[in-house]
Length: 322
Image (cartoon, rainbow, N blue to C red; front, side):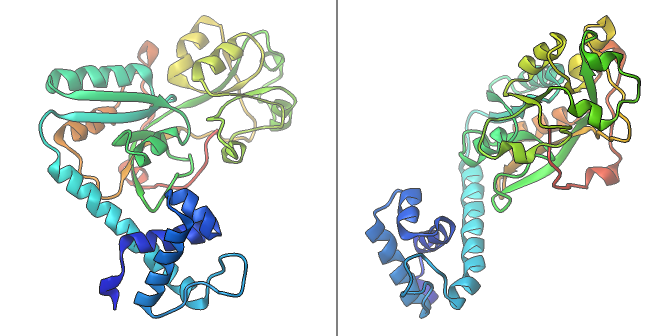
């Protein structure tokens, strides 16, 4: 019975469920609606069950359809893993590294890592992209990049297709310009007081991005998609915000920015993870890059970043990022 089931039939089944209609599935898979209908009928025939109710306008699952949907997703996921492994096995010739790195990752450390990698793998072709929020994992899912350095508490784009592994962390600070009203507010500053002022927030400008924000104190927000723009706006006294210490340590030392003490409001460090497709086998060059990125670095003025214990490194909680 199952010998006649194809992966395209299962993809059509899952697409109809995800899109809520045969026409929506056709648009997503870029196939004719008649082809989607034919695939569903062929799948039902092979499984000898009806997957969708026939007396409703919308694509409504039968009890059998609801029961078999997780199995269909699992088969598709495992097939993608197999394809990734096959691609890794077939890969040969010039070492290639394609990585998307979140803008919050320490830039000086990234540069040092890339220089070292180029020195050790002189023929390697390196493709680098700087992204924000979910941008890195989207590049991996679209196969533009093989790896992504992502913020742990950014929601995963597709948990069924991706896996994350702990990399390192960076300390965060809350800051504003000396001319900003918060700079002269008695410390520690309560969260309500922060909420009275404009907060500068980095976002990828995707629909629903505001739902993924953490550490936000109020509704007065300016949204930017560039970390440098956020830093410039803070230094101009136009708002306050959270920034990695490694980025603003010199600004704090020179007095262009001042660090703000928060009252009863914990802001944990940024935890970076390596994101990759499930089943993807790392090349020696990619393995070396991950090893370099995860090594401790020295922040400006010799200040080392924080580090997690081995036990903490294993914790991968689904928190969300500012």
